[in-house]
Length: 385
Image 1 (cartoon, rainbow, N blue to C red):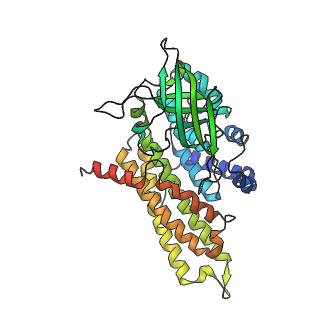
Image 2 (cartoon, rainbow, N blue to C red):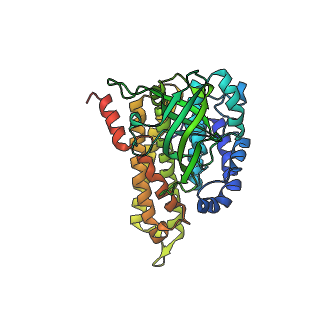
Image 3 (tube, rainbow, N blue to C red):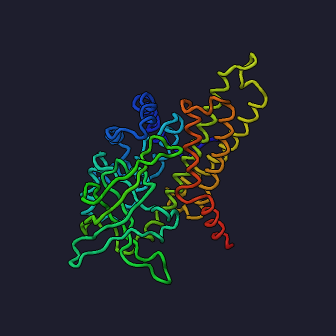
């Protein structure tokens, strides 16, 4: 079927990005994978390519393109090559929407030049030890000074993607106690300079997958945060967090679909080259049937992801629709990648093969951004159940 979600500009961007990945990422990826993160200077190359400024308004040094489709192309191309750009995805896909929606002109004038150039990498710190998806249960606090000039930040965060290399972190903290009638009340967002006294980066966490994405623990001990670094209104942070969830979940859905498509490509390439019992593995009926079934599932996931992408760009994607797309695409990807790994036999279990890394990387899709169980709850609620 003819695909209509991308136009000539998107395809031109795809060509440029594919060449960049082949030249600047693939040759170095094993080294990055071994190190557990991409080198900090790589982010400057992404900035030079223009990836950080696509959605940033022109007055702040960006291209001013209000569309998620260029990000979708990036999901497809990195998955196709079996690589990732480390924690930089959080910089653009998660942090930028909060900055653009909530930042004042003065704040954006300070933050955006470094954001676009890669000199100031952003991460976002929501999750805390022991709270998981229960953000209303966070215990990190930010106490306002008597003169209102600053806040004093104390607490800890974990599972912070991009947190090891970040220069600024959007930190969620309690500025007021929760109300009996509303546990979500009292949370605020702050853009915290990681160089401030009392700010500490703990362990770079050893994860099952996402081997080049730096994920860290953070702690704050009497960190003095200037009042002008408050993002949005005080105590309204939880409502802000909910506003970006549809885009975040679509991004995970699109990435999962792209991973599934890449898995089929890897499996087909491998089975066409691998010879057993004097025949190519791809020539066996079981192989053909497995690949055909996986291709059909990928086609369905692509249709769901593309439809949700169009809805997001049109400003029409609902929370339930995003949850549905995430649930479907991540579950399909998990099944397809597993079946494609099986077609690799023992080599599929070796990290030198992209299918093995893909298998490990994709598992988190059903956890972060809201678990599959949370997605089902959202969908059921929208159904009136």
